Length: 184
Image (cartoon, rainbow, N blue to C red; front, top):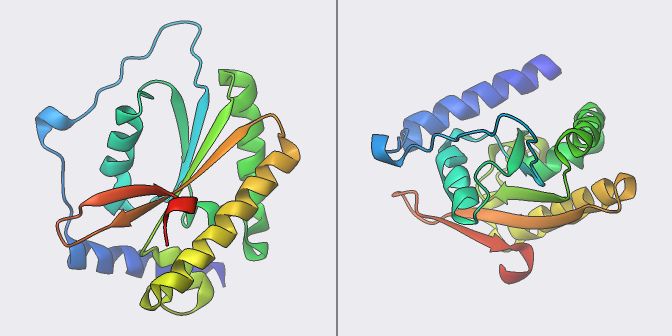
């Protein structure tokens, strides 16, 4: 079953590359972080989907929030779903263990979870294209985001958890980020 899931993820990724193309950043827009030699702290952890279409936009979003060199990141297919799905308990356990380690290592205080619309992992897990009904898609994302927050705060009640959804607006890959409360 896991081999089938991996194969389907590969196929979805390949189809996405063909359908959307890889929009690469210009050389002058590439962010090269400078890391302090000692006393490194990263008070934020970013959990997001590993979808290649959003990698540059996610990094740009974090930098625009003033978080360059202030966050660690973990990418799981489906982001919030990766730590809120009974079919993926190993992922949840691994994430919680990594979160605990990063909290100790980098004085983590905040977690930002970014899901995105048109996520192939959600379609794969739900066995259908959830994007056909935008209201249902949003409802499903909200459910997993809120549950992921609850799972994190059950183990680490001192961490602040922010929940966001990225939305690819058109074929030019214009990306908007919303809190789950501001999307309808």
